[in-house]
Length: 157
Image 1 (tube, rainbow, N blue to C red):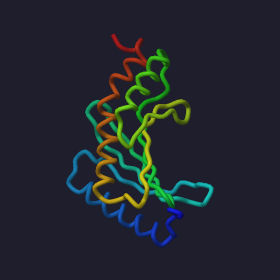
Image 2 (image 1 turned 60 degrees about the vertical axis):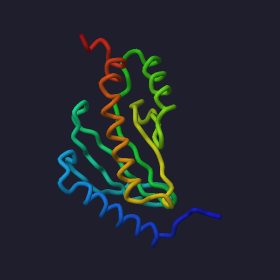
Image 3 (image 1 turned 30 degrees about the vertical axis):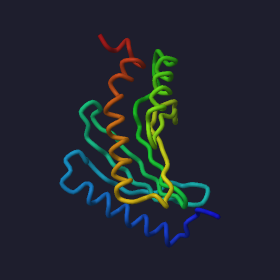
């Protein structure tokens, strides 16, 4: 049995995400911007949302949501590649992965650190989208300063 959704079903999810994000942003001072775009994949263009949030530990956190035919992929940029103590930083991230639910730290383009995850479309409801955004934001806020102090130790007194 395939969990591949047809284009009409994906379009329904796309509209729902638009509505959920608009409601999420309404009156929420943490949300700096929500934008739409597309990302090219092997099967064509996939809808993508950019949710930019104001933080306290990290000035801004940008969350990307990409809608595929089977999953909603989500990710947040955490920090650039470490300049020093890389082994210690990556060990820290791997140990943190053990306690994360629905997310994991990953090394992305230019060796930057990201938080990523996927959710099957069959499980995509408004509450899950809220949990995803909240988890990405809260985890980034929680770890950002500590990771910077490891990966850029000589920049701190």
